[in-house]
Amino acid sequence: MKLKKIITEAVVKDNMFQIEGELKSMKSMLIERMIIEGVDDPGILKCVFMAGGSGSGKGFVSSQLFGINATINSSMASSGLKVINSDSQFEAALKKHGIDPKDLAKIEREDPELWNFISLNPDSLRNKGKKVTANQKKFYEEGRLGIIIDGTGHDVGKIIAMKKHAEDLGYDTAMVFVNTSLEIALLNNQGRSRVLADDLVKKTWFEVQNNLGKFQSMFGGNFSIVDNTDKKPFEHAFKNKTTGGVDIVLKPIEQKIHKLVNNFVNSEVKNPIGKQWILTARALKKSNIIK
Image (cartoon, rainbow, N blue to C red; front, side, top):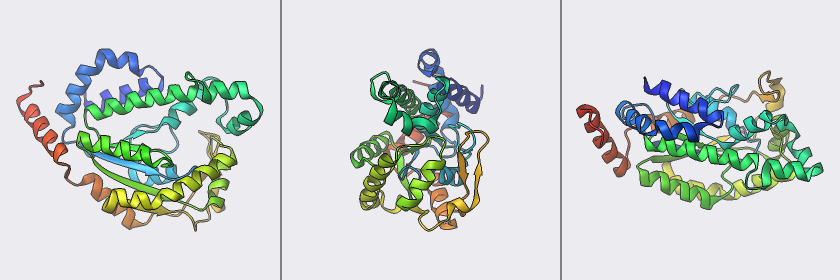
């Protein structure tokens, strides 16, 4: 069985909330095949953090930079990277329970009991989605597959910890920061398939803006900003038949950003730990021995 098919099947099971049980019986075989077949795959040992407030347009940017299909719940990118995003799991769980993601802000205001089931208690749909995503991330990391960690970046401490964790495993790390004005973020939020409360969008927007300089220092030359602030996204909005939300057609991302990101993903691994892992994996591949 080819690696791509193995990973695709695992992701399908993951999206069906079955990955934990299934992977217990498949894990050894999967990891072994990932190491043997995947060591020379595109994006190996590359970790890209996506940051930007709700409504900033991260989905559009990801689809353009990494070849992620924005019209489906996809965990695979044509660039070879695997997407880590608990929101997709959360939205799938909402729909499974007959809850329209566009109603979240209204539910939070008017139905505390349902909101507790959705988001607050330890066994909430949101927390279950996070657990599934954590298992998915751990699975990809076992084979040192390239990953995109999609989040807002409102918590600097969390990004610091995740960056260190990735680098300790041998990954090279980078960040793409998607910037926009608060006005556009609020407008864009109303067009999303999962609508958040305005207060939450504002809070996250200010937190992320305050972290911009810190992220630049953390990632240095591997930090890129995609600026959506001056665009007019609602001039070309259209209904998305799949999600029920509104897709906002933004101007093409600057070619220099494409070049920076492509160079990072396709360049040789620079992390010394990662370099040693690749040498070991290639030796195992050549000898067909897995220890």
